[in-house]
Length: 123
Ligand SMILES: [Zn+2]
Ligand SMILES: [Zn+2]
Image 1: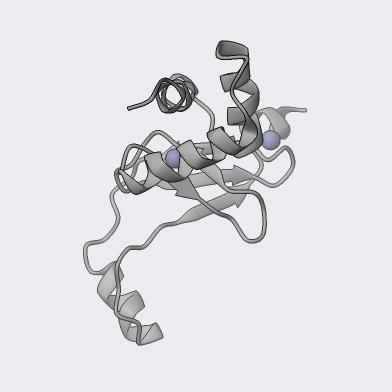
Image 2: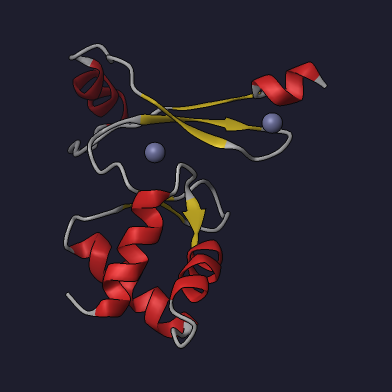
C-alpha cells in the first residue's frame, strides 16, 4: 500500500465520526501536506474496493466513509447531522420479507434511525 493510501486509511480508522471525502482530505493534509484531493479521492475508492472501509450514502448528501465494514445500522440527527453507529440484532427473516415485498433479489439491508441526538434534545 502506498504512503498516501495508508494515511487515508489511518485517518478513517482514527476517527470516531463518519467523514466525508472533504473531511478526510483535511485530516490527511494535516498529516501529509503534499497530498492532493484527487489522491485522497482515488485512495478512498481503492480502500473501499479492497474492503478496508465502507461508504454510506443518504439520499443526495455527500458520501461518508466508515471504518466499520461489517453490517451495522446508523442513527442520524435531523438537527445537527451527527451520524452514529448502531449495532443491533435484526430479525433474521427481514431480508427475505423485504425481498418479497419489493420482488428484488436481496443482497443487504440497512436501517437508518432519524431523530434528535441527545445533544440536540438537551438544548
Ligand atoms: Zn444533533
Ligand atoms: Zn457506521
